[in-house]
Amino acid sequence: MSVARVTEIKASSKKGFEDAIQTGVARAAKTLKNVKSAWIENQEVLADDNGKVTEYRVQMKVTFILEK
Image (cartoon, rainbow, N blue to C red; front, top):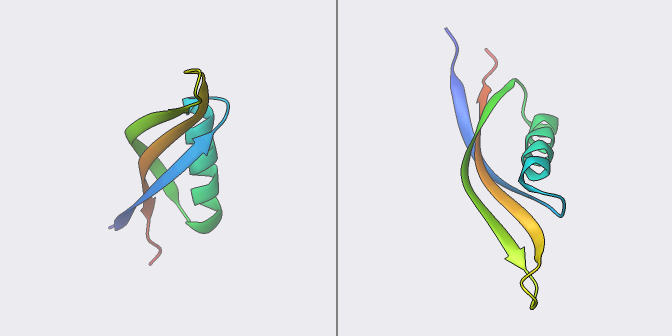
């Protein structure tokens, strides 16, 4: 039997949402062992005074399996 844990993280990127997700999952995997999935809970963008998007952010829940 496996026991999983979920942790919530935020990640950002200047390139796009996909890059923010990849960055967040990769960073989580450096600290957490057995990362299995991520659920994207929220997305947002930051914009400059001209309305140009300057940053993409994601809030995600990362699931990982605890070691025995």
